[in-house]
Amino acid sequence: MAELFSKLAYYFQYPFVRYTLIVGVMIALCASLLGVPLVLKKFSYIGDGLSHVAFGALAIATVLKFSNNLPFILVVTVIVAILLLKSGQKNKIGNDAAIAMISVGALAVGYLLMNLFSETANVAGDVCSTLFGATSILTLKESDVIISCILSAIVILVFVLMYNRIFAVTFDENFSTATGLRSGIYNLVIAIITAIIIVLGMNLVGSLLISALVIFPALSAMRVFRSFKSVTVCSVIISVVCAVLGILISILLSTPVGATIVGVNIVCYTAFFLASKIKKVT
Amino acid sequence: MSLIACKNLKLGYEGEVVAENINFEVNSGDYLCIIGDNGSGKTTLVKTILGLKKPLEGEIVFGEGLSRSDIGYLSQRTDVQKDFPASVMEIVLSGCLSHMKHRFFYSKEEKKLAMDNLEKLGIAHLSKSCFRNLSGGQQQRTLLARALCSTSKILFLDEPVSSLDPEATKDMYKIVNELNKNDGTTIVMISHDIQSVEKYATHILNISDHSTFGTLEEFKKMEESGGNDNG
Ligand SMILES: Nc1ncnc2c1ncn2[C@@H]1O[C@H](COP(=O)(O)OP(=O)(O)OP(=O)(O)O)[C@@H](O)[C@H]1O
Ligand SMILES: [Mg+2]
Image (cartoon, rainbow over all chains, first blue to last red; front, top):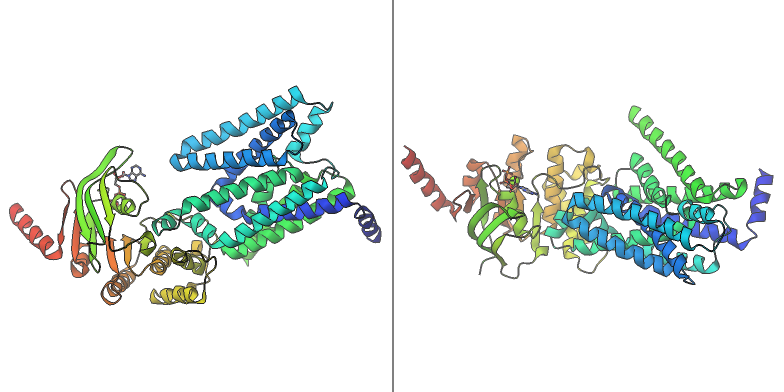
């Protein structure tokens, strides 16, 4: 045990390890906040599509050789999120197809671009790390950390302020609209926050795994808790704990960060699933 | 100037007409009952008035400074998310949001209003319960309590008693009637229960191929003359 701690203490001397932990906690926190609304509004589907779009945008940004990719990816993803939301309000079936089309299309185009224009020898490695997250935790720059923290803070602030309205709009959109709440605006807020979270999370766990960070904590919490507030608070705690554990494990065992965090989340979900069964029996 | 006036409304979905030539007004303090066969377009009419869908033709005019935030609404089949983890109190409180303009969090008064409405509907003891584990009738009461939180001006009720037991049905009619008579809340209610309709309503709108609108007396007269024709 002592050996474990001294090993961790050794790693934490390095700024990039501390950065990863900070960014990891922030992203995990943000991702879990919107879990319940996204899962229940079937937005998690949109989220999945968006993460592929973010991957495509990253590929384009790489080709265009921007000094900083993040703003470009963010703008593209937010715009697509808004478009998907707008089309979703018109018809349901068309929307599902559109999401599938955009998400697969973005994935293919992104991969194609990376292959054609990549300057590094290790294309497969680059692609793999954008899809599944960094294989090691060496990749975060200080500027990334600052941007991540600012964006996370914005997401958390907006969520807390809009909390009651996000609840109302996700629980019963018709009632909200009929009684004069501007549901459109809150749906827009949800879409934009989702896009931001996905782009942020791509740095940490990669674009394929970010959905897991959104969905798992919410599903775990919903197993045991029964009110919106308790579920939200619980998923935030679960998400942060899983992220910290996942990052520590990945440092100690040098496993890929993203996959490790998702793995811890799966274990956690299983535990909550069993707990809910036991609770029912007794 | 009436609270709501509908002129030559034509209702439908994507060009398919459900009902047309609907003309009526609702004045402050009225108790309007909308009757008609299944599928005649009653729910569609209410949703159109509430701005949840557009009319194919015609216009709906809100008068007396009525705005959406003065409206309370209890939908027919609950449009709500079935699996949503939410306590009764959280749901009822959300009815208060429409008056909160630029405030983000609920005040003491709003929490009290929510509690009062729960008591009025006899489900105060369920305030911390999980909505999805309630019975159909209890869910209906919760959603009515939410509607009451959102208004004291005009309340739209789409078959509010459809999933209630006889005792609760009586209670519901009594509560709605008291709201109308004591608090001056205007009521627009869809109902199949003609007997209760005749007991409480001041106006009747019958949606059919030839929609008719009139006061309760006019409606009763028409019914009698209609009965005479048949006999
Ligand atoms: N979303 C929809 N899209 C297309 N058609 C619809 C939709 N909703 C209802 N309809 C059609 O519109 C007609 C009127 O439906 P509506 O729900 O208004 O009837 P209703 O008078 O409320 O009936 P009930 O007494 O059963 O509640 C029906 O023929 C129905 O098939
Ligand atoms: Mg109906």
